[in-house]
Image 1 (tube, helix red, strand yellow):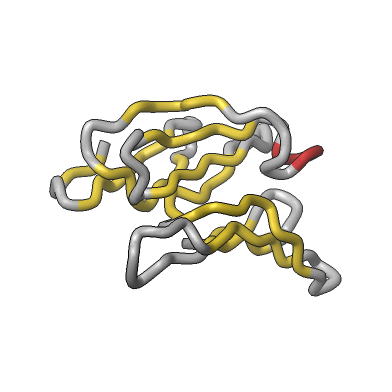
Image 2 (cartoon, rainbow, N blue to C red; image 1 turned 90 degrees about the horizontal axis):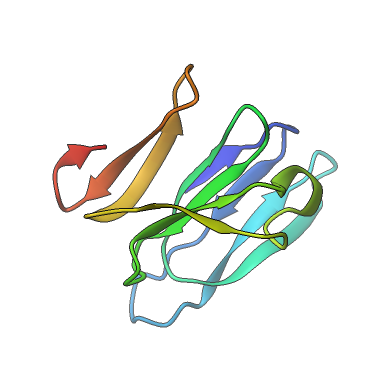
Length: 115
């Protein structure tokens, strides 16, 4: 999954195709083409999106917790700052988008619905 952040950098996360080990990460490609690792220990990156005020949202779809996290200080500290559970999903959170009213919409993998 990947998305351009409010600063114009491309944020992308990996997906482990085989096995259950969290072997991948989330990266940010800077405007100067520098690469920064934002978060380690990821298995299936999803829901990368950004609010108008600059918070980042993210989930690791294959985690048992089924949570979408919010990183409220993304603009200043990336994903190393505090994170909070934004929502506990019923299904497995997949791709997300934020609408013009600031609401997060999420497609749930395997449950055939958008919430």
